[in-house]
Image (cartoon, rainbow, N blue to C red):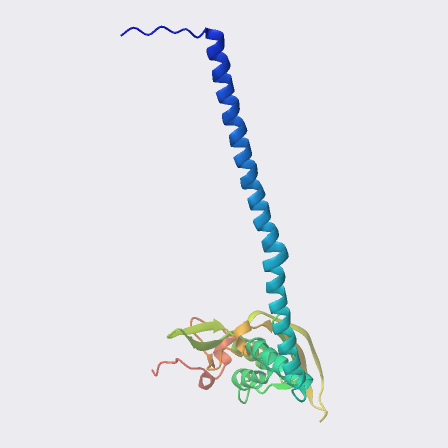
Length: 235
């Protein structure tokens, strides 16, 4: 069978162009309809659904507010709840300053190395303790300094024992002879040192202050009574 194309090439190109135009126009119309549908859905959500949700939320807020307003002493209840919430946070960061008496009881050497404390100050920001006091002689002052230097703080943490030096950067200043209230000649001094933050931390409830002489064989140390140290082996 023989087919003869009787349509000129120009006519064929025209028909093809018309088909392409029809496709483009149809696609554009469908895209426009889809876009309008999306815009309409968004408008319905914003101006209808969202308004309904806001109305429900506002009604719930008004109902709850009215119920709270009927409660007696509401302001006092809210104040107490706020204070209770703050108490827990403060209890975690508070400092137990009363432990300073445990420090003194541990580091003050017994007689004959008597040390009298006249004032005591703590600086929480720098973790510094400053002790002003008096003692009979320079030797007793040195005993006091060595006792502080040999003290350690121990406490349990995660089933292990933590050991920290009680004092770092020990400084002795303002050393001079004077008279006490009884007219006796005494050596007055100021001693300061940096203590570990855990010493006064509330989250370290079980602690112990120990004295140790490990590795210290200086002449001044030899004048310290052995009775105030732990860890001594009986010879």
